[in-house]
Length: 489
Image (cartoon, rainbow, N blue to C red; front, top):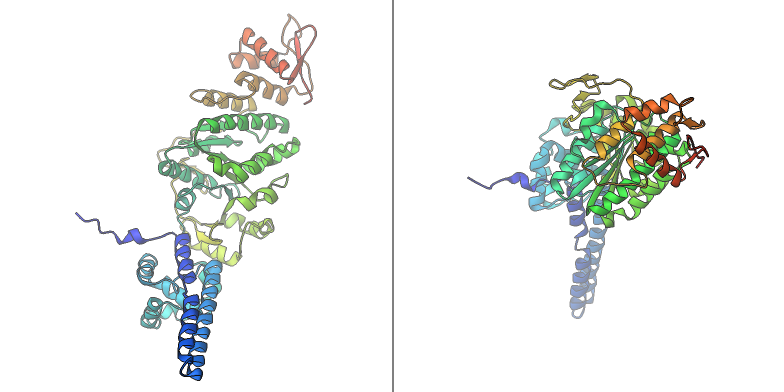
């Protein structure tokens, strides 16, 4: 048995940049200046010219060190070039992790830019610099930016939970990243509770949220904006209560583009208000948010008020690479080269590239577990998975599933009871401008009666729920007590 494991010294791309930056910052320029002045003054007592010359030498060396350090830090930030700065064991660990080809390419780039090398980098470069014919040509900026071929994006997202925006068109892989990251986050942070708002309710994607603690689903695509607004408000109300009951929560909002647009049509600022609050002050109270969307442009000005406080993760594949240039105006990228992204997509085993806002770089996207059991690229179910019903469900069915699945085993609550939410959303979707007669022998609204029957709402429960909706000023009831109508709120 042995505990020997050199790989334990391996670091993420971010950590290597931090180590290199700290090394460059510890350049001892100030000490060199002080030593030079002290020696110069001491010698000047016996030999003024020699003292002045020695003092000037150390001053020049100190200034050079400071200048080299500043230049190195600039290139660490902008290009991720770190090999030339690393020293001792750090250089050897970086070499072991990334291989000679990458390190040599970084050093050739550093030489072209006239950057200062560490002793270990000089020794390696003198030994290997002429041995790899394929790398003798000085690498271009494009080559350097694609050096980190892959990133462990799941590790970066979960080592510390932060507010994050995940952006990509349908089929790009947002669900793959989120489902893998949620599972890893719950392993690393056992007290973390994950609360999901899913405005899509796609049967093929239910497996993504298998490890989440609370999932709110509603098929918003064909629902009226006013119905979506009611549902979303109930979801956020429930989340507030749930977050107060737990020390650390992660709110994941899927399909943010669709949800934002629906709420904007309903003249609701709910989404923007909530995200602004959570990204501004949620972290200190144990609340963080992950927000997935198809585009950085969400109705209501979301990208302007939110993105500056969230880490951007952008997924690109062949079908949406053309949109990246337009997305750049949302200022989600520190830098963007479509050639670099296209090259990464071509080289990636998944046919995708991913941008990570903390490093400001693009990487090839690694393979991840598909917890949905459905391959969006081939549009086929994976072996061992059975096809789920993909029949288009009505809004009524979606809400029924939502309430049945969430109100069992969940202690969440909101202003309205589950039956009240159910009836209100049905009215908004089906009878927003009509009287609904529910009592009497003649003229009753059979659509409403059928709805109540399908959801096992008996007459007593119906009357209590209608009373609740009247008291909360959601609906009005006729003087005869046999008809109801939605109030314009």
